[in-house]
Length: 144
Image (cartoon, rainbow, N blue to C red; front, side, top):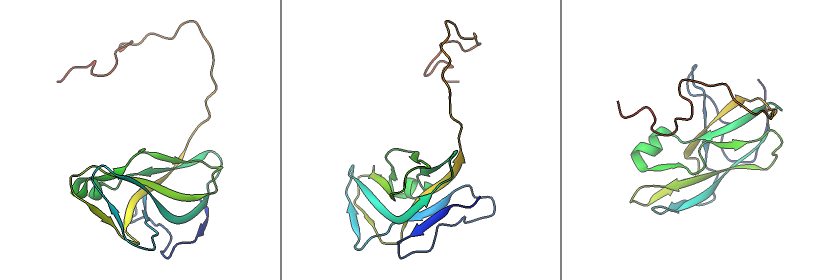
């Protein structure tokens, strides 16, 4: 798949780290370091503008290393970049740790996965097919 991109950042385009990677790391595009205090959230620019094909979306997901080591994650995870959005890709980071975190220019702050999706069409009915689970919701299978 080919995706048109305008790169207004100082950094190379995102790329897959390994042959089997599903996500590409995105980098912060900053003039100065940004201090992210505990429980604070911030929108971090990437300098990237995308033209995603209709029928696809870009999903923005946390980087596991930032999450486990520093408590830094994506607030609306996964974030969605729709095919008709043409603005700059910005990432909403939140600091869930008790320590300050400094975001530096060029730091890998999240990963982006390109994913195909379907459009749903609603069909109003009076009944739904029954299943073994039925109406069992959160925690319905117990602890073991």
